[in-house]
Length: 293
Length: 206
Image (cartoon, rainbow over all chains, first blue to last red; front, side, top):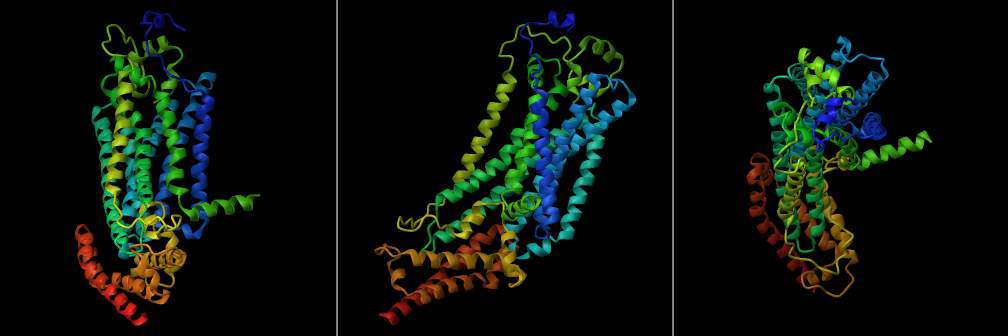
């Protein structure tokens, strides 16, 4: 479309473009699924527990991520059709708002996962006092604090993202949180293993190793999905900040849309591995659909 | 993050971007990136990143699998394999620790909710396991087949009741890192006690 393109080397890394239909389908599926989780938890009184509130928080942050992508796509289509200008002040503000929504979604996801892991940790290690430690009110307060912090950080990062100082803490936060969540789960695992050993020492018990494998698989899926969906994008931010003109970095950055689609896939997978594993929630869904029909 | 806008009409944006430096437009401007003289493959970062990520996830999986190898001493083939202990399913499934215990919550004191639930289910499953043990005597379970059901339940009730021995749990609460060791150290003598009860009940039946 312009001559300068032809002057570049033929082995140029062109942008890998994901078709818009795929984008919209994935985003819509993510939004609908998470909305379903929210509605189910709100409607069923039995699910008004701290554990489910943290899962709802995760669902909200996933929804924000997919919503961001959808709005961005709509925005770009409107730009292409000429309804919006690219340099207008209003568009710039809109763009900033959308970017802060995205960062809010990422931070919200990380902190929600942390809250879910901490809640399970308290459930297992402080089982007798769980209901005194994690009351409903405390859970709501914790969620309010998390979301206020995420909102403040996202606005700050969006406004000051041109400075390196904001990118570095953002990218350090990500592996730190992952490592902390991994430590919590590993400790829970060790306790579970010792419990299983004690049961195995009872004369009539049998311990099936397959059930213990299931725990390892579950945990690997939790953390692996989060890593695989978010890490490519975080690396992209790092590379865009520090080596935008390096050919290797430029080739990595050419797959940006694939990374964005991965984030939306995370929004689809998360309810399946957190929310839908609970039988109570599944039965609520069935009731909702049966009543709707 | 507004990269899609840059696909069309790159030259006009390049002219404007120098004067209008805003981060969202500057983000994905490739500009004149030359691909001459690349030593490695141009997608090397992409490939390296994904391979590294896959290796890390697989490594984490193996570490977790190694952690969960318990080496069960009594693996009897005649046991029904479909019945699993509730404890194991709790252990394996992190998805539903407490919400299925709401059935018991209104009847049982709050402090003993989760562990009492484990015990109840252990008793249930052990009963079902015993009922289905109709085959010839198995080496580790022969003496249990001969024990009538009532004393079997009695023995399991003893085990359950010993778990509610408050001093043990006070220890577990305060030092969670030592908790498992405390339980392991304190439990065997109690189990021996119950075994002696069974042996005495044996003598009574014989």
